[in-house]
Image 1 (cartoon, rainbow, N blue to C red):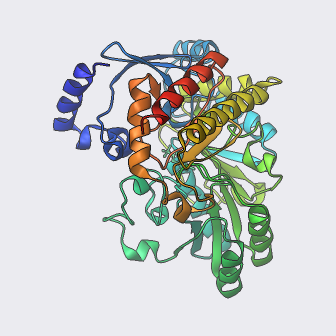
Image 2 (cartoon, helix red, strand yellow; image 1 turned 45 degrees about the vertical axis):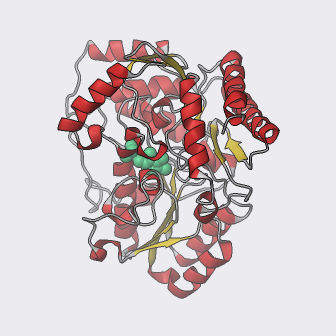
Length: 427
Ligand SMILES: *Cc1c(COP(=O)(O)O)cnc(C)c1O
């Protein structure tokens, strides 16, 4: 497989853009490669500038649950384009998307649109603090909530990939009110609440973690968070930027039957355009300007193109059987990987929740970030490179999730498993 055009474009990009990329993990540093430059996508496939094509399991890091260029989204975008690209004034599209979100995820009584997941979590944290009049935010090691200063503590995703403990540029005064605890540690969390619960403004987490690789919540973990936050009057924030409309129709909170106070969305809610959102109880959401004193705004928030793509995507996801199909494909894929690893005698852990999946090269059961870090990163890198050479595009980091879309066919999954078998035998 030839990558000379990609390499040329990457070298040019590196002169003008830090690392040649606009988001760090894309540089593929941790897997010892260089990025392929994409020309176009179609259904489950990516096509690069050198004429190679790949079955894509990154799907723009999650948003493309319908695949690349789904006809209903393209059509909605064309129609929106006819009327203009941005007005900075209300349109009915914003209410339509809000209605779809509130009907699908009942804990969300009111919702505010923003432009990214980062903005959603940053705003939700501000709102939790404004609403409670308290300062402390509890998060969990290996969860990634975007790159807002307050939340860049023991973070997952690119921060974990690049092995950065925090980030220069974030003053200690900004993070001194952020506590990061081990994911899935029920007793540890209860202890901290017993000591400082009455000063805690909010607890934020990924209800299924996807930014330290994929890690499920342990039985009782989410329930404990709900009970304890209620007891101490803290706001429970589910960061469903990745899990929202991904792990189930009504998101992780529906799947696990837990009602958070606030929820953050991103990725799928924008159907491939830049959208984030945060919402929840009316009582809390009414504290946002202009109805309340907590300030938050956005020039392009509620952008008509982005709303149109979001509406088309969430509408398609209302159809019966959609999530069963996603579940079956993803389960087949992970079972195939596991069988391939077993056959090759390679220590391997894999799992999935809906169409969000992950795997680690370790014999340890992975329930938190410490466990995730026991994965053999060299072996992951070799697997990644081997799969890419066979036309399978996986996330270029151990600490990311794997996404299946409705455009992935049974044959795509079978071909991917066959590739995994061949690669596992060599690494
Ligand atoms: C991707 C992600 C974010 C950040 O969203 P951006 O749109 O990249 O700012 C926040 N939280 C979670 C759980 C994510 O997966």
